[in-house]
Length: 135
Image 1: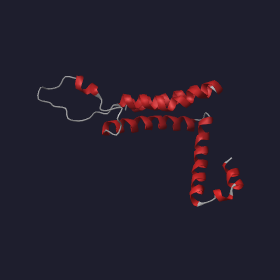
Image 2: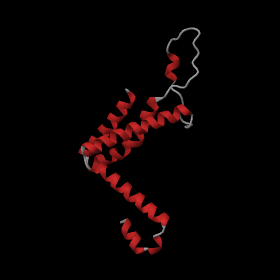
Image 3: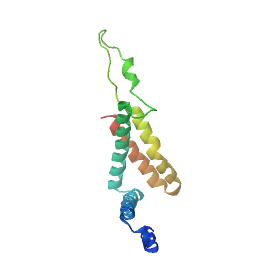
């Protein structure tokens, strides 16, 4: 598909277009991993889910997102009378929920076309989030 664009439109061939085509081909091959239910794709999905969860959690703690912030549950625990909390706890539950909403949409749509692969990928996403929550 992309190669036919390059052949049809010679002006399409310039350095920036070449870089974009090369990038799109890499994305295409990476995306094709998710259409095959292998151990490798299971690992990639789990690591991706955990990575998204971790990145969003750290961004929330750093104040880079407006829609989330520090974990407020730390303030509910009893402390010594002179202790004053001045840090920002990681809101890992928000990160995991964001990862679930962001990554599971594609797999829920896939359930109609390929139920086995869709359920397997949903499970792999869950495993990645579960591991990142409990480490």
